[in-house]
Amino acid sequence: MPDLFIGIDLGTSGCRAIAINTAADIIAQANTTLPAPAQSNNHIEQDAELWWQALTCVLENLLQQCDPSDVKAISIDGTSGTVLLADINGHPLHPALMYNDARATTEVEKIKRVAPIDSVVHSSSSGLAKLLWLQQQDFSSRGHYFCHQADWIVGKLTGQFGFSDSNNSLKTGYDPVNHCWPEWLDKLIVNREWLPEVKQPGSLFSTVSKSIAEQFNLNKQCRIIAGTTDSTASFLATGATQVGEAVTTLGSTLVLKVISSQPVSTSDYGIYSQPLPDLTGSSNPLWLCGGASNCGGAVLRQHFSDEQMVKMESQLTPDINTGLDYYPLANKGERFPVNDPELKPRLTPRPDNDVMFFQGILESLARIETDGYQKLEQCGAPYPTTVRTSGGGAKNKIWSTMREQQLKIPVISATHTEAAYGAALLARYGATKST
Image 1 (spheres, rainbow, N blue to C red):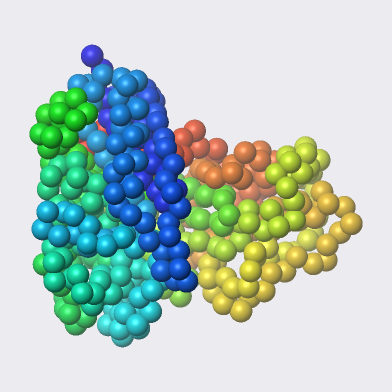
Image 2: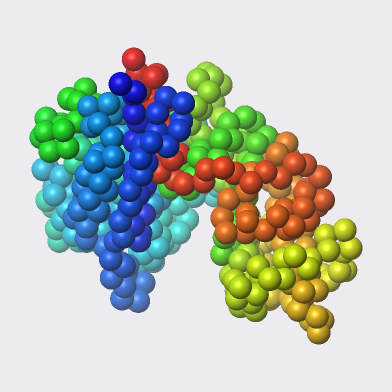
């Protein structure tokens, strides 16, 4: 029987699972939705038990499509910055604080006085800010495990809490270069007893617990492999593995990431690096360096419907530049590749011809993408050798031609971009590595 490897992507709005074989072919997949998080001002919460219910649902559906005894390994990716505090038995003591929960305003001011300037913890939505906030709550006396979203699911599957991976731990202050929780955390009086033991993505955590094996009819030797964040799992799904290979996500915003042999961090531009799981088996450490522009598809949707854009696509003329010089922001403020919180959207002059206006925006986004990769190069990352594309904008072939003209490198539409598929690749790699 074929060996199978499962990746599970746990997000804010849903849960998805994909099973692949040794050849990385998709054998089965399942998904379900999650209720929207509860929001009150800057407090954004979700009951962690909903995650478990969703995971149980997708895993049961997935395993109806294949033989559970063939599953050799499972890996989980979760939303970066979504955290909770659990008691000694792994039971959550409160609703989970979501990745965009920004209540820890006082805590982040303390962090800014202590944390290195190039650290990614300088935000009220960071895992570290939330940890400091949780330390001040009445229920903290019963706290035992500080868990990122994926960590808690791993604990449920293995019966062993207190483990994490280096990607999810990054925004909680973990030092991925020296592989430790740094000493400067002590200046913030962080409760180190709560901090998880951190492993590299693709490493072996443990096997499934006896009760989980029985619940899902899994082999008792089924391994749980250290996962990653949802964005890194999506990157892995594209197949990019070599230094210089990049992925641009053309969604509501423009997210650029490139593989580097060294970490690059520049807080002024929101550029940071995280360890990239090396699915090739090389012993050389790789880093995923990236930045995100506030420009993107959100601007296009302010002016055109999806139907209009599809209709206009065939009328675009990529070999004839419009000469329009836009900076298509949805709202005021930009950080990468230009750091200017006061930068205003620039979408004038607007021609009477909608197709020309549409093309002008696409040309400008292509220019900003090129500027972004040049900025990453200036900060120490390699300029891309190729760019794979994910997100809704990847479907626009003529836009890809415009981008290729600007970037002067091949632009490839990624076959796979699903985070669950990337997590499945991690499960396959980890199972092979640990045998």
